[in-house]
Amino acid sequence: MQLLAHLPLLSLFATATTGLQLLQYDIPAELLELFGAGNPDPVASSALLPSASSASSASSASSLSTGTASTASSASTADAAACYYPATFTLNNFTTWSPATNASLSYVSFQYVDSGTKITTPCAYNATSQSLTVGTGLVDRYACDNSVISFIWQKNKLTAIETTCPGQTATKFEASGSVIPAGLKCAQTNGTDDVGLGQGKGTLCLSSIPLSANFTSQEPSPLQN
Ligand SMILES: *[C@@H]1O[C@H](CO)[C@@H](O)[C@H](O)[C@H]1NC(C)=O
Ligand SMILES: *[C@@H]1O[C@H](CO)[C@@H](O)[C@H](O)[C@H]1NC(C)=O
Ligand SMILES: *[C@@H]1O[C@H](CO)[C@@H](O)[C@H](O)[C@H]1NC(C)=O
Ligand SMILES: *[C@@H]1O[C@H](CO)[C@@H](O)[C@H](O)[C@H]1NC(C)=O
Ligand SMILES: *[C@@H]1O[C@H](CO)[C@@H](O)[C@H](O)[C@H]1NC(C)=O
Image (cartoon, rainbow, N blue to C red; front, side, top):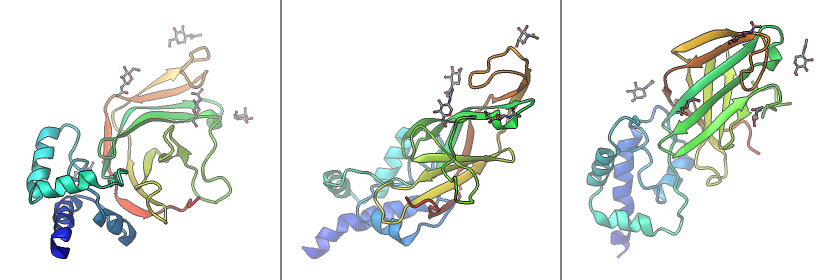
């Protein structure tokens, strides 16, 4: 009885271990434990790029598990809060505006998508945004509308940060990964152009392509509260 009860977990673990190899970072022990307690298949779907067929991803994931027992068992687990690992992210409509005169009026905006954790949220910072790291000495970072996601824009590189399994670990973990925006098309704005978040002379740049990247680290957040 004891042995049988453990079987579903073991097969889940085998499934996930296969998926976890695709991750580009190590999983801290506390997260691995959480995963062992019933995370269905954190990576198999999220590590595939959105263009890959989700149908084939689903079928290959289920063929990796040893039977329907594990699926039924995980579905009936009372803890419905699924915990998926951030593996990849995509930024759509990445836009920056840099005013000619006052750099502190710059803005950045984009739509953030993590198809693995199923998070889609607008992200922006502008002259009125408050950095999450004020008073910490850390580089400025800004929350997206969904505060599970935050970002750093520095030296033309965008670093996305996603809280991992929010609320499910004693330590707050976060995954991060960076992308240097490609395909930027820039134009000068003049004194009367209204560019949405700002107005006046400056340079408005828009990436015409989705910007995809992998998360490459998984660390305790420097902002634990
Ligand atoms: C990008 O912006 C255009 C124009 O505002 C909009 O039609 C399109 O849906 C946006 N794409 C995404 C992926 O948000
Ligand atoms: C630049 O913009 C910031 C934010 O609105 C403002 O506090 C500051 O006074 C401006 N600086 C100049 C030189 O206009
Ligand atoms: C400025 O950025 C904040 C996020 O920091 C956003 O909520 C707000 O809508 C932006 N302002 C405008 C005018 O879009
Ligand atoms: C500013 O640029 C817009 C197009 O972006 C143009 O229609 C307008 O005439 C320009 N205004 C001035 C004062 O140059
Ligand atoms: C993301 O990781 C996958 C698998 O390790 C790799 O094939 C892919 O090139 C990476 N993508 C980027 C943008 O680095």
